[in-house]
Image (cartoon, rainbow, N blue to C red; front, side, top):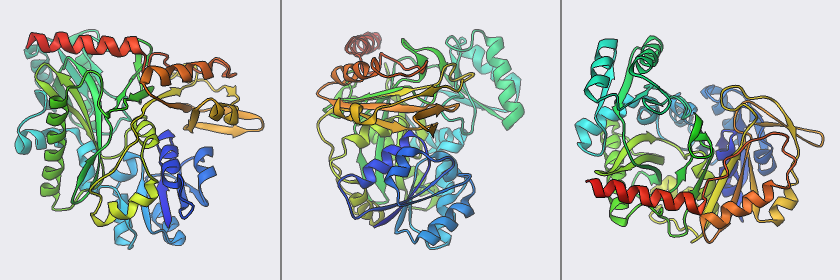
Length: 439
């Protein structure tokens, strides 16, 4: 089977591994902005160019005569890549441009939830004037989040009281976003624990993946700037320690309603990944974001326990017969290593990795933003690579990664040590117990 892949990050390296895992019949054709050495190692043929050059991407896959194409990042989806591929007779797994508005237009997503689903969302305002924003902030006692309406790579949200110190600072940020986009999204600040629920959608069935929780802030203890995600963990039972079965069921029903609503609104079957980012609150799970692709880093975790080659699942994903997907009962932890100064002002450094030795320790590498050179690698401006481990518990997987990192000559690369740590997870459980008790 000739499979195409679009993207070049850690998520796409994880997808490439999952596509070719234990399946010698898959030939992978990869289109990337910058070559990812992990994807290059998996691929038969690669091409490079802008990911939003949808016609250039389509031309590459036409020449490759691919059977089906899987698109990793959100930017080419929002740019209408699936529509262009379909117009040229190429099959692809991913939402159309109209469906991708779930992620590329947060105001549209919020309006769909309010007007069509009717539940599962925080109070919000889509504002185009500063006076509207000021009134919303005042009415919510300065407990608000300020969000761009468009794509920001997971880095555009600022919360008053966390990374905005005053209402004046929040209004200044809101004004800057309105100057750029014409509008801004303000939401009530939610108190609780976030989690990610991703699912496969084949246009007929919706199949859940294990729950994951990523760690957004750059430093341990959720300190420092917001990032695209410094790491994530999953548990062997597919849930998370602080999520009760009834709460999972509520989130799952909300995600099903989102799919039904977007299909009704666009009159198109949704074929791809849907990714609900939820906040578990005293009122239950509420949708923070809807994304139309695999999460990054969450894909690194869940695809590692997929109990089959993703390539063998693709035909069922395409023809509407993907009614069941099984995952191995193991816990996972992924931790991104990032350049010094990330995310504000990354510095380029040289480092080395002994991939064979890491594999012997049960630690896998998923490459992201870096440049190979003789004897090692140079960092770029974004997340450099992720380390992944599987074990009986997140704490055991985290410890395995930490033990491996101590022996690596990383020359100043930074990571979060607390992803998957047993004490951190126990504190999350206690926090949710206290939050539920208030209700």
